[in-house]
Amino acid sequence: MNDQDVERLFRAHNAHLVRYLTRRLGDRDWAEEVAQETFV
Image 1 (cartoon, rainbow, N blue to C red):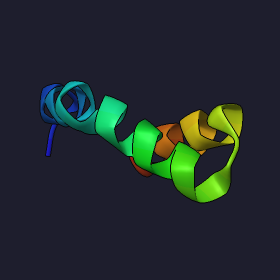
Image 2: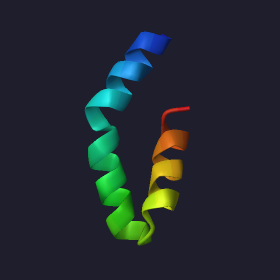
Image 3: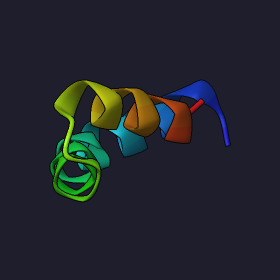
Image 4: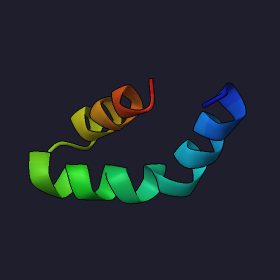
């Protein structure tokens, strides 16, 4: 998987993942950090 593929996945799924993680974790900043790490 190249960088463009990862970028495409990130753009397609990040917002949904952050919303889900925010509900589960109860903290948007933490959710954004976890989501970012998912794609690293």
